[in-house]
Image (cartoon, rainbow, N blue to C red; front, side, top):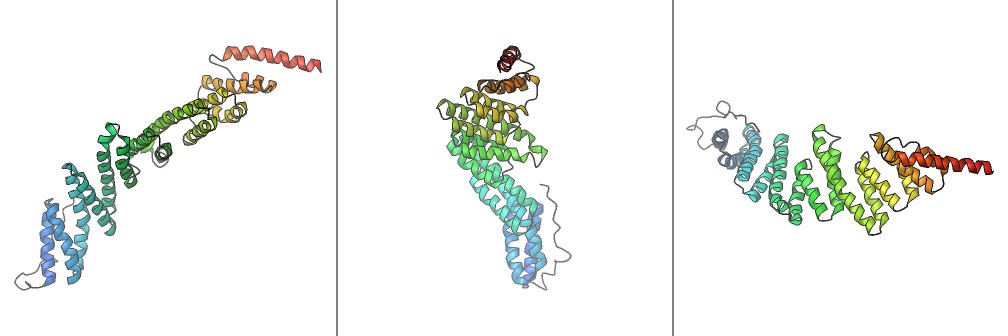
Length: 328
């Protein structure tokens, strides 16, 4: 944040010391001028207590121009002292001072310092959680990261680490929540495109494994629910859609496969991808003896390693359909 030099009140506020030595208003003005000098010299720790005194004493002496001038400098003074503490690795002290900077900034309508303070607070919590995260102590990392995320949900580096920590602890409810919130940020600004893409990738990895484990354990409904959560977060992801169809096929759950098939086809971006999906849908209809529909789906298989078996099955089914008609 650039610091604008604050002009000491010499013209409007300066008075003759000899004439008004006992004048409370004059004493407040002198104190402010001293504080302003410290501020301009970036001696914020010296300026701050004087500025706070100027507000209290200025109200008592009814010197509102001094009060208002001091209030303009107080938030940034706290903020700069907080940053100094961060640099000195005194993180807990820094958090207290930065919280006060935010409180004063909101009180004195300094939106810029308020935003900067919140951002700094989030980064401090990220620093506090980093050691635990890097040593795979995810439970400890979550404690710090969650506080930083609460302070600033747009700190996507911290948010990604928080979501990963939740998922590593098998707390998928909170992990999915944070990943989903990161993905949603992309709709607000293009600068969030990269973290949103990473959130989609990580969310997909975790939930696909979770669904696989649930399905292997025989709980196919739980697996379907997990995959539904994943698809809702990233509907146009071909891999997620196709894996759900494969899971249904492995469970011989043909009705669900057919119901999900149309949405899955919309995510295909190549003839090979669409052919893989249509082949599964065709197999489902084939198994359910929906012969003509199966033929129609097999005909949509135009590329990849499913083309040959599809062509062969079309010939067999068309012959069967013809024989049935002739028998009638």
